[in-house]
Image (tube, rainbow, N blue to C red; front, top):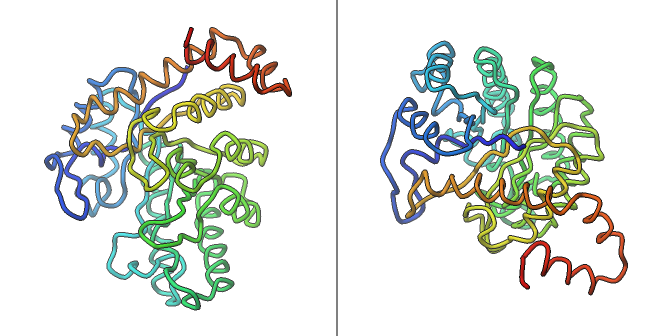
Length: 326
């Protein structure tokens, strides 16, 4: 069965361009809330703004909090976009001092993850991209990404580093926009503990077919890690799973089962106007039901349907066996 965790920053105060949602909470209180949500056993912690020396929570203090609440850390999420000097890109800045500082954030996050016993560090370089034509030297930017992630991956090589891709935000176009692009970078670097964080909503938003993109990652042999949420393909709304792309999510879960994924399904979901705990509960509840549904149908039966060239029959199978439209 799947394991579930959530990104704890979504349990506190969050903002969009117009509103502030919920109230700021200390990590201790966030972990207490997680423990009350059915099926959740882990958390993804944001470094350096939620945990770490700058946040006033050293590794030993963080470990004590996790142990007190009986939770594991699924990943340390290192933020390389929040500092003022990263506004035009940290890892791809033309200033070598800024690039070095961005890499140091990842290295420090690896140190912190090792100290608290986390299994990986994940990084989404959203500030690295461009808005306009003739704005960027793409060749130089790709070279900087190779250098930065190569250095970060080689440091504490035993600590896996996952790169999370997204087509846009905060930049109009992020350099690492899709699974194939990110996998190309990972392959060029060639460190076996460097991999990809696949966010279901980012994949939908990038106009990928999530199960297809997942297959690329799986066949690469590099590690991957999963974030779950949903959107309407127009923006990364971070809605709850199945709310807008239900059949795509069912297929995605089927392929995760098929590939033997036994790691965390981490909720990267923005509750905004809705009850926080209730929103995260939906993610796990939906995934559990889908997982069990696939198990009850049987992998062999689904494989037969996929192999059948008569898609009309396959759709009838979807109607009756998956959607239960009798």
